[in-house]
Amino acid sequence: MPDSMSDSPTTTTQVAAGTGDELVTTPTASAPKRPGGSHGVVFRATDLDFYYGKARALKDVNVEIHRHEITALIGPSGCGKSTFLRCLNRMNDLIPGTRVDGRIEFHDQDLYASDIDSVDVRRRIGMVFQKPNPFPKSIKENLNFGMKVNGIKPTAERIEAVLRKASLWDEVKDKLDQDAFALSGGQQQRLCIARAIAVEPEVILMDEPCSALDPISTLAIEDLMNELVTQYTIVIVTHNMQQAARVSHRTAFFTVAGMDQGERYGVLAEHGDTEKIFTAPADKRTQDYITGRFG
Image (cartoon, rainbow, N blue to C red; front, side, top):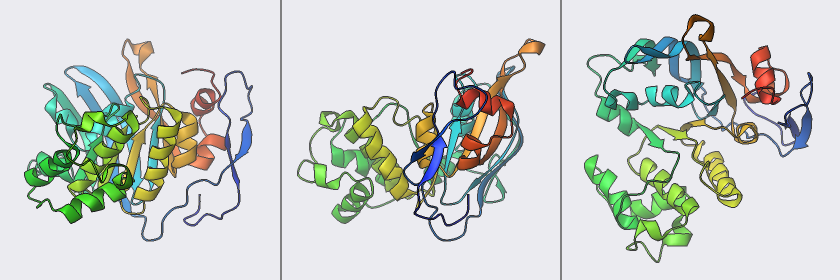
């Protein structure tokens, strides 16, 4: 996928079981354009293994994630997609007994070096979870809390700015003091995105952010991602392959391995430009998954 894509329609795989050996492509709207500017490497995972206690969850993951792009992580349940995502901002540190072998670099710096502050990592690399999880506070206080904790002075102008970035301002500007739980599910998720960007991160990680939403709210979140990627690097875990094809620039396909050795762990089978992954994958496991043969 070139750095600057044309406006002409492209094709993406129609995901359906029983489509045969050939991948099926259908005309769709244009794939997302890559915003201008440098597309340097933000994350680089090298020979990454991850363990929950003695149980290996990921093995030999090698991948790069690029600046101002949306990278989709796809694959069957239990293949380590979310585990890998949480490795990128050290959320797994909060789980006792976990261990990382290998290396993850963030702007060429070892993310797990002993002198790296994991709290600062999670400020710079924000996260949005599968189910909307606003605080049991007002809309305004949901935004104020994170800013105060991170030493950012909450102001009316800043609150408006982050809500505008999250495409939520027009819907909530007259009810900022109302309970966040009064919002719809899609609005709550956009509030959580606003809360994440309020602390001025560089990267936004999203763990199946649309799985609990209706189709209209899902489309709103996808449109929002395409707006935010001009300012942030985004990594999204999704089980929705049509979504991955619609919104991402690059796709990484994880699958399960090790069963023949009495283990079960995730491996990265293939990664690359989304168009290529969905129309001409190099690995048969990828083709089998996106055509519905397994997963």
